[in-house]
Length: 554
Image (cartoon, rainbow, N blue to C red; front, side, top):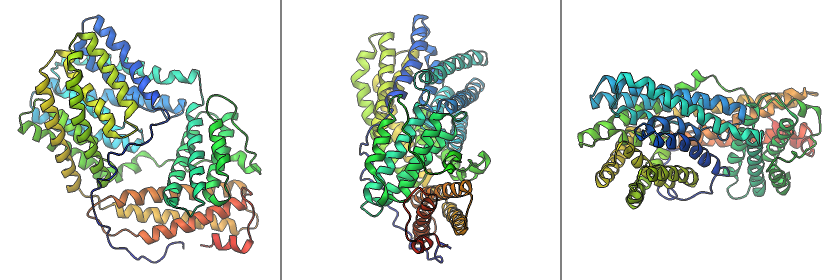
């Protein structure tokens, strides 16, 4: 076995990070795609309603338009499915909210409904891996709708408007397929090649090599998921698959990889030019199997139970606290709490700090622009469009920076039904933000996730099984090429999931000590086996047989 006997380390000190929480990252390579898409999805319905003198309906129109924020990294065949599900999910949450608002005026009941909806939206978005912006937009739409004046007779019309704008958002996001049909797959493959080149620069032993390796395998997994979610295989897809294999091989043997060549291949994937051929050495490359099949949805729901409990409890308590303080819009506190919950406590704390800082700065931005927005209804619409664009431009740099634009946009949306006193809006927004962040984080601490250690143990066992299976194939005199390729890919997936699981568990509180040494040993032996497998496949120069046997030994 690759793992040593259990020797739990002492529990690491649980400290809440502050350094780097507000640090800016590089902008996303496709920052302009969601930014332009959301403007294109919001503008026509908003200006149509402006012309009709019905700006009071903009909130329902924006519910569908905001679906344009999703699935920009997905290939178009998969994007069509994901966007359709997002629109349906948005309509479901909106429908529940509107019906609840029409049936009761009890703020306590409405907050409770909003908290349950937020928990369901969080779990479903995480289980289906829908990607950013995740549940936050859906929760914003449903929670705000809970406190909009409503009658049962109005519900069908409002839902129809949201469905129509959701369909328009779907068309906006699918339109680029006419120009660059393989764009998302090309970008994902280029990202895998660049990440592999970054790891190759370390030689597998330099400073930061562990982080670079984890980032490389994450990018490779994302590339495989992208390629395998496309339609029937094509010449372009086959060529991209071979490039991803080259990235995997570089991760298995970074000292022998040519980082410059990997980056050159990545650069050639820009635009619509031909995909470079890599000339893999044997026929197994023509039968690439990709990553292991995704686990069924129901099996991914169980581990999310603590997250669901945190979300439901935190959102409910945040909303109740806002009501107790006499705030007229408790959904702001509810949405703040819903936006906090990440994979572990440490990340949740970081998000809480980012949310508070971004919202406070955003309130000051609102104060600066409110005279302009009050020049007329058209100015109000244009300001909302500008902030929706800015939010998507900035949010990939850091969540707090995107919130600087999201906050004034949310405040301006409340004015479509009529202008309101700016000072009251600003005060209530700041109070609700602080209340939501404090109460939401307290709920995250209170609801422990003691199963995190169990998931690390299961990930360790899966990595050991994958390594032993691969080693047995290597011991055979003539293993089937497809079996060897499948085993290598399965081992890479298991090691990637082990690292992700260990990192997530390391940020949790109130749990037993994690088997850190066993994780490191499993990773080291697993990556040696990956290198030995790549050599056996002819993807790397041969080494001394005795050394290769040592690398792959269980």
